[in-house]
Image (cartoon, rainbow, N blue to C red; front, top):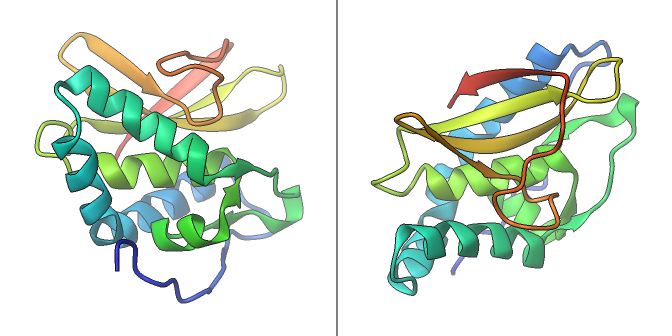
Length: 162
């Protein structure tokens, strides 16, 4: 099986979640998802000729598999890679888990994966996506963006190593 069947258990983030609670749950979901994304990473890497193509394909696959569907504030969940794959929908958290799980299997990027949360509405941190920090270079891979490597405008940001 290309992607294992999920257990269909929702990991609900606490009712009074903070941004840091959400990030912690996403990090746990990624850790629990790495093995689930292993075959996908190998296929993408095998079928691409260079790193740019590989990253574009990871982004494109997230767009193909996941339909964006915002979760209500009171029902924020962190799902595993296989659950996201089989559900076929999710919000920015789920795109981030999906993308980071693939990248954490890649020998070149596995130690360079970060989560970036941003505040862009003047209120709070409301968006999260994956970035790769490679020396002085940052590569943005936001599955909710209309194009690969495009970063949303923001007022503030916080990065977390995965």
